[in-house]
Amino acid sequence: MAAEPINVNEFQELARQELPKMFYDFYAGGAEDQHTLKENVEAFRRIMFQPRILVDVSRVDLSTTVLGYKISAPIMIAPTAMHKLAHPHGEIATARAAAACNTIMILSFSSTCSIEEVAASCNAVRFFQLYVYKRRDISATLVQRAERNGYKAIVLTADCPRLGRREADIKNKMIVPPLKNLEGLLPNKVISVSDGGSNLEAYANETFDASLCWEDIGWLKSITNLPILIKGILTREDAMKAVDVGVAGIIVSNHGARQLDYTPATISVLEEVVHAVGGRVPVLFDGGVRRGTDVFKALALGAQAILVGRPVIFGLAAKGEHGVRQVIEMLKNELELTMALSGCPSLNYITRSHVKTEHETP
Ligand code: FNR
Image (cartoon, rainbow, N blue to C red):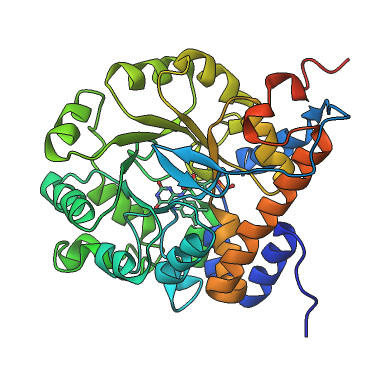
């Protein structure tokens, strides 16, 4: 039997062994040259710690709140598509792991278990991630189903007017499986297979509304009472616009480097966004988090909490619900150790001066 994985990278290797190549590549890959994919991870390595000593860290408290919901650690589950390609229990397994770890799961619009199935399967705090379709009525229906089923926020993913060019999926002829939330809503012909190749791009480009713009946040607010977060912010300009249109929070994200290649690593733009927001709404963060040290670095640069995408899928692919729990617990344990070794008994001890970015390092 293979040795037990002891960190996220080892889970990735297990997932690689476990999954058909087409699915592993879909999960692990990024856009075009995958430059941003590497950078999202590498940029964390250029940030160094400035730990404090002789602080009482005999107890370390990781707990925090996001939109008023108490969670055990500032580590949430990012919305990622199609979990049944990783494990037969799909998003239900992921949601149960979120509940067991006492954290928040953001369910992807493009899930393989439905909004209702996930809600019925666990008592985790859940947010719902939204893509806006050309057929606005379909998106509105899903928002209303999420609200009725106890989801606590809508996460509007705004970096996807078209699908990024993911060359592995094109080569592997990756096909979109049935998307449970859309059953009966999307005519089959919308997902037309192009030339016997991958239908991912055709699916997204035929359905996603590329005309979506800032004015449409008003429309979204008019169809739901839930708080709205915008995911996909990378600049101070967009951060300020998001605050101006009255969102409840923003998520700094480059979609795990799957959209526009050569966007900067998200960790390298986090601080600029945090300054622009000036504490008016919470700033969440994702992209490249693979270690508890990464979580600490993002918090020191101003994130309220981070989300993990691929690490959760790797856990799911390797060992189902248990694997997702292990991945989250590993990151929590690593964060706890990082805090102890940095002189931070709770999250509010973590400050900007606990880290040095590459520009500050002599
Ligand atoms: C994603 N992401 C994503 N985002 C979103 O808003 N809706 C979605 O359906 C998906 N689907 C998806 C599938 C896969 C396979 C991946 C890897 C990512 C992006 C996701 O929410 C998040 O931004 C990144 O995954 C964060 O980067 P890491 O943690 O994967 O490095």
